Length: 286
Image 1: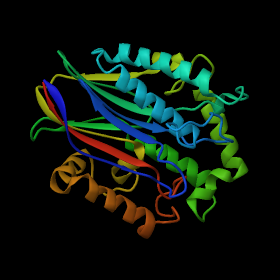
Image 2 (image 1 turned 45 degrees about the vertical axis):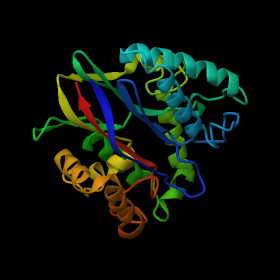
Image 3 (image 1 turned 90 degrees about the vertical axis):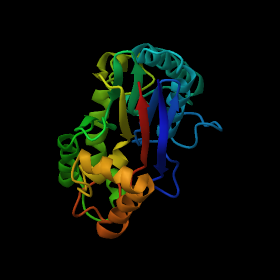
Image 4 (image 1 turned 135 degrees about the vertical axis):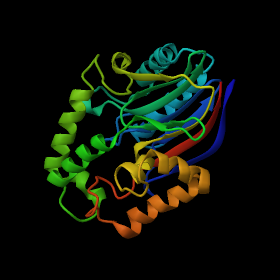
């Protein structure tokens, strides 16, 4: 019984900013983590392992915690231990007091855990997982076309042309983004991954009874190839592309669309020209 890595990729979205995604595999677990881009001045103290943004700090510390507790088979127990570690690290490394809930470092994750009942996927936020047994149907978990359409609609309403990277800075957009994140990070009741044990109360989880399967997990920046841009016509096409040409070729297609086909986000409204894009493709043997 085990999880074997077939292929993996992690593409940074900006040359002058750290990659705020992480991925990993240990024991009977595998995961992807996507730190949410900060909406204000950096909050966390800097260290050699946390890079230079609050989102990268969150992703790195969560990755370390998942790795540290990977011997725990039950995913909810693993996440509870990871939450304790995040809270402790936050208290030790933060550079100042929290002024607004939206300042709290946060993100999304997808955790796959192999156990006696099969493969359990546990997630928070907009990462995505695809599971396929042999040539059977592809099951999808996490982000959906509907959730991505909602974000595109918000960008279309608040964004104002030009380089998508500048859209965050517009006062109306920033005010609404901060308000939404503040609601998701209510103290003691965070709805998404954060150094707040409240996120444990809002986990999504599903178990698939499998013996052998392929598993493709990705952050929303990689899932955008299917969900936002339509470069792949659904989950089956994503899995077929992974098998046929590997994740690097899929990443090339993604970046060509963002840099050459639609650099200003006119065809597909988005906050950033390119997001960090991470995927890990695994073989499951129960």
